[in-house]
Length: 124
DNA sequence: CCTTTGACTCACT
DNA sequence: CAGTGAGCCAAAG
Image (cartoon, rainbow, N blue to C red; front, side):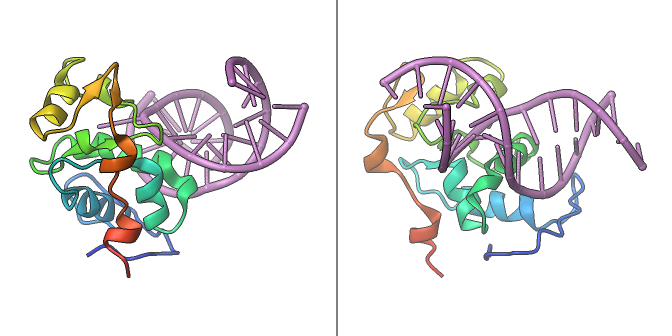
């Protein structure tokens, strides 16, 4: 279970156990179907919202994992900033729509409604 | 080892 | 209100 860590002694290697990436994946895996979260929200949950870039990095690494719904992680505007990493430009949207999320123009509709905040939902 | 980069965000101009 | 710069930290070159 991911907890707030102030010390980011990660040293994560692909295929190995790490803290930062592992926590990110852990959180993403818990995003309910039909909901989305943001890089910033995850970063904030992990202790600092300014580490959002690391979350993106974790997502990039998460592509090798089978059950990490990276499509449910978007930027703070609800835009599908990571769609370019899903093989085809429409893949991410299709996955979201399969979750019941309405996507239009690379942007999640009703974003504020379906937004899933780990800091709240996984309140510690 | 030092430099660059990245699926981000916030603050200031 | 849009554009720009800075901060963040780890991985890859």
